[in-house]
Every structure is written in C-alpha cells, then in structure tokens.
Amino acid sequence: MSSTALEAAPLKQHRSEARLSQATLLRVFLRSLLLQASWNPQGMQNLGLAYALFPALKELYPDPDELMAAVRRHLTFFNTHPYVAAAILGGVLHHEQKISRGEENPDRVLAFKAALMGPLAALGDGFFWLSLKPAVGAFCAALVPFLHAWAAVLFLILYNAVHFTFRWRMYRIGLAMGDRLVEAVGKANLPRRGIRLRAIAAASAGALAAWLAIVFGQNEEAAWAPLLAGGCLVVGAASYWLVAKRTSQYLVLYLAAALAVAAGAFL
Amino acid sequence: MVIWSHVGLAALWGGLLALERRAFLQAMISRPLVAATGMGLLLNDPQSGLAVGMVLELFHLGSANLGAALPENDTVAATGAAAAACGLAGGTGLSTPAMWSLAIVFFVGLGQAGRFLDRELERYASRLAAKALVSAEQGDLARAVRQNLWGMWPVFVVFAAVTALCAIVGFLLSPVVSALPLRVARGLAWAYPAMASVAAAIAARGSHARNAALYAGMAAAAVVAVVAVYVASGGHL
Image 1 (cartoon, rainbow over the protein chains, first blue to last red):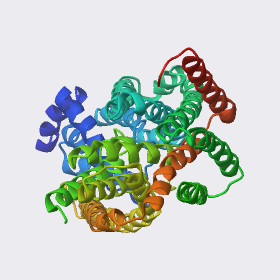
Image 2: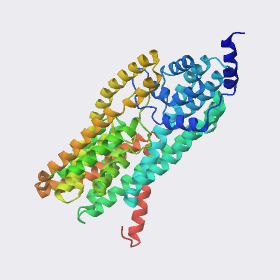
Image 3: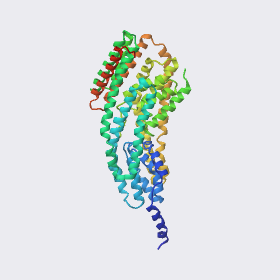
Image 4: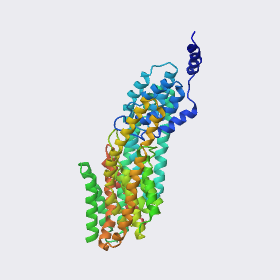
C-alpha cells in the first residue's frame, strides 16, 4: 500500500462524518443577508451566494482543489427572491454535506439550484413584494394620523416578524430536507395569504384617503372645509381612474398639486 | 443658513439606507415611511419627515424589484425629500404643509434619478463579478468571495452625496419660501392633502388586489359614515 493511500484513509473517515457546526450554519445565514451586495446583470446574486456559502465550503472541503471546485460551482448564475434564497441556501448546504461525504454527485446541487430558484422567486415576489409589503405599508400609513412616528416602528415590527421568521425557518427546513423543502414551502400557502393581504392594502389606502380628506378639510376655515374635504375625495377617485387608464402617476400628482395651489391661491 | 451637522447626518442616513434597500438586510428600514420618519427624527423635525414619508410610502406602494427589472428608487426619493423638508423647516423655524408640498413636488422625481444611478452602479458590480471569477481561477478564493463586499461602498457614497445635496438645497430654499406671498403659501398648503389623496388612490391601485377599487371605496365610505355619525351625535374630531 502506498503512503498516499495510508494518509487518505483517515481523511475519508473524517469526511464520512462531515457535518457543519452550528456556528458555521449561523455564519452562513448572517452572510446570506448580504446576498445582493454585488448584484450584477450577468451573474445576478452569484457573488453573494458564493460569499455566504464560503465558510461552510471551507469546513467541508479541507482539500484546496475540492474547495476551489465547490466555490466555482457557486459562482455561476444565481437569482431568486432574497428572502426565499435562505431556503435554497439551506438546501445547498444539505447537498454539499452529502457531496463532501461522497454520497452525491456535484451535479445534484447545481440541478437543485436551477430547479428551485425560478419558482421560489415567483412565490417570494408574489407574497413579500406584491402582498406583505403593500399591506403593511398601507396599513401603517393609515395609522400615521393616530400613531404618528410610532406608525413607522409598527411597520418594521409587523413586517419583520414575518420576514425574519420566514427566512430563518426556511433556512432550517432547506438544511434538514433538501429537495423536499418544496413540500414545506407549499404548505405555507403563500398565494392565498397574499390575496388577503392585498385586500387589506387596498382597504387601508381607501380609508386613509377618506380620513385625510376629512381632517384636512376640518383644519381649514369653516367656509372652505366642505370644499377642501370633498375636493380631496374627488381628486382621489379621479386619480384612481386616471392611473387605471395608465396615465403617469407623476403627471396625476403634479396635476392635483397644481389644481390645489390654484384653488388655494385664488378662492 | 446651512446647518452642516444636519447635512452630515442626512448623508449618513441616506447612504446607509441605500445599502439596506438592496445590498444588506432588506428589513424595509429603507421604505419611505420609515426612511423619511427616521430622517425627520435625526434632523430634529419628525413631523416633516413623517408627513413626507407617508405620502411617498403610498405613492410608491406598488413598486417592486422583480427579477432583473429595476423599480424607481423610492428610498432616495424619501430621504432626499425628507432632508429637504427638514432643511426648509430648519431655515424658517416652521414645519408647515406648504413646505412638505414643496419638498414632495421638487424631490419626488429623485426616484427616477435613483433608478438611473442604480443601473450605473450595476456596471461596477459587473466588473467585480468578473474580477471574482479571475481570482477564483487563480486560486485566491477568499479574494474572489470578498468582491461581494466591495460592491457596497460606491452605493453608499453616491446616495449619501445625493441626500446631502437635497438637505443643502432645502436650507438654501428656506429664505425663498419665507418670502412667498400668503396666497401662494395657502395654495401650497392645500396641495399637501390633494397630493396625499392622489398618493392614497395610487396606493389602492398599487395594492395589486383583484377588486382594489371596491375594497378602497368601501373602506372610504365606511370612514365617512363613521365620522358623519360621530359628528351628528355631537362628537368633535
């Protein structure tokens, strides 16, 4: 038996038990918060992904050649929703541990990323960007007249309670389940929850429009109060119609401002 | 007179939030409502920050960063307009709806300028990505992955500078605003609720709800009805 073979035996044994430490897992999660630091049109989140995974890859692959191969396979194109990326990151670590133990081919992790980044991006965009963010934003904006600056604090608490819980849970699920994380994401029923949140956003915006019209009308001289309050409501309804007809929202905003300035100056 | 410590704080906040918006965390501290309110608190004028932030939050409610598409940069619009509003108020000693209107009218367009800057900054990030690949080829893996962090500093510098400029413009405009005829000032004061109504309508539209008009209309009608009943029963708002 050659000396190289004798030296390789303990390494093989060590790597057959390769598991990432809790500290490394936490480090990867924290570094994933910088996923989009160098977002670029070619590789999109590729640099961020490689940066996040690097501590784990270093632990899994003591051999420099294997480490280089592992880093290079994560410097390829990658793009998904930044929150849902936590699930993919967990899944990638699940696969990389298996690859380092020799239980899987490196192609599996590439296929895993390629298969999931698109569908999960669509799910994350639909729920977080197009539902939760508008709902919490409109709801808290509607509370500004009552909570003042605390409305901004409430915004951060409500949004991030969902955001960070989701991000951390998805990371752990990806880590534990690998490819089966799709089932867990499916169970979260995000599209249905998104529909409800969008209704909250629309209702909050409508309620705020009415409240602001009344309050600002009341702040003016008594003679002008109904005109200003009614005018604001009419302007709001007309704006909705104009924006629905694809009129530039900047044009609508400037038109309303010009009308109000003229009315305030000459009436 | 320009208060340079306020300009410095505005720059710091504007730069940090530009990073939070896309590069780091994305905990929505960079949303207009939070960003502008924070700016107001830092510059000792939370009322102006909140008033500007509420309107811009609603105005940009429907925008989203989907795939490779770049939305308008609502963060720089909010931090810039809020810094200018605080500058105006600081210069005159008053925080009024007329000043909030002026700040919104002049600086809401920063969202589009910010998108242009974002696009330009992506070119720098592309160069970093190319450099990372070269470093990986050469076996310097730590350097390769570290390129990710270098993408942040130009974002901070560019948006800090833009926000500082807005604060300075706010201070410089304050004597002009003080000299406005009363009629114009009254008109500008009326413009604020008008713009808030427009922004709320745009927000209802931007909610992406299937029956947005119905939900918004019903909620508005409910508010009007509750207020009418309350006032009719002798209550005061």
